[in-house]
Length: 200
Image (cartoon, rainbow, N blue to C red; front, side, top):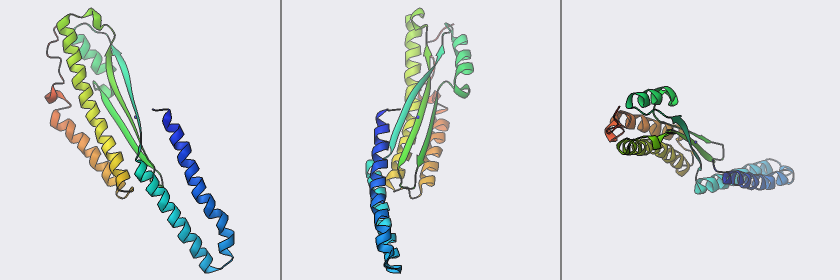
């Protein structure tokens, strides 16, 4: 839910915003002297510039800040590994994806997503079948968690595509989809998320 390049994008966006509204404020004194019409002109100009900023950020799309973290497991038996996954895994899960979407009054959207996965630190000490089993399990877990991350990305992009109109509804829809995905796959078990070849 980290690219250093995004700091440059934030600075660029801030400069664009200040440039737009700086030009508005420089004209406030001049137009306000003309009474009500001047005030209305200022309001209209500000609205037009605000709209231009929204269009700019909508066309650019959301900023995506994605990261993957690992927790360590080192058991050499099926029973020990399952126990470690349960005890050391995030919130008791083998893997977890967390995502959050934010946007400001200019509809500049940002997605922060973080995937947490297990890492076996003694994989070389296992037999060939156990290693293959672990790799297949980890690949299935990655696919499952990346699907959750995809739901977050779709939500962020749809919020931007709709200029933040109905943003909370869109985010709620994709949060529901990610929960339905877990129910449909039994948290990945129906998609091969098992240590089928693991032996004690």
